[in-house]
Picture 1 (cartoon, rainbow, N blue to C red):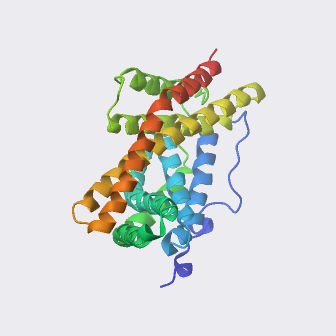
Picture 2: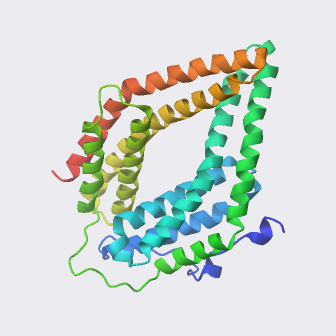
Length: 309
């Protein structure tokens, strides 16, 4: 069966021909459903490319769409209905398979760029080093393909599509998506305050996840914002994106160094030498991110506070 024959369309899931739109004055539930509608369409659009593996960007964008849906359901589950949390959990299941392959894509792409700048004599052992991770990535990709071909995945798609048009009652009290940004901001600020001067790597990774939740909440709120609020949310989105980039570079460097350490245990002389060189670079990249992450957080905090000033 070819990738093309497995292509799913919005119509097959009962979605309308055109994406659902929400106006700023519409109730919050309309914005939530419109966001879910946009993201499941994005997920479907990138699924064939994810299956074929022709362009790693397809898998990345499929994973981003999934994360945005999970964030929307976490923030607004009560508006959507009782089915929100089970669907969010299933999206987490799929996200694990996508994330495993994505981590290898980032690592392999980065290593190839680094090795391309090495001396000619280090090119061959560098390519052998990359081939180790290419092989591991192939195993992860097979697991992902099985997940995408499973009945569990098909059921998940149908359940998400139902949430885009569910007839759950709107809460009696109005739900202000912009006011709702205060909660993920508070959680992020609390997590920052709890960190020591030199935080463990895992704590900075957790901080990045808090930042993503704030960013996705701001994306949702942006569709309901008036002009003055929209400008402030735009500033917040830029700040949270920069924050994610800094902590993302940190996490990528940490993971790369860890993977290289495992290779060093069994590598021959030339390949071990190259792995060691790259590991040193990754530790320097980690240090560079640690030197600036608090500045990027300050920009996020300032932008978030401006929304409620």
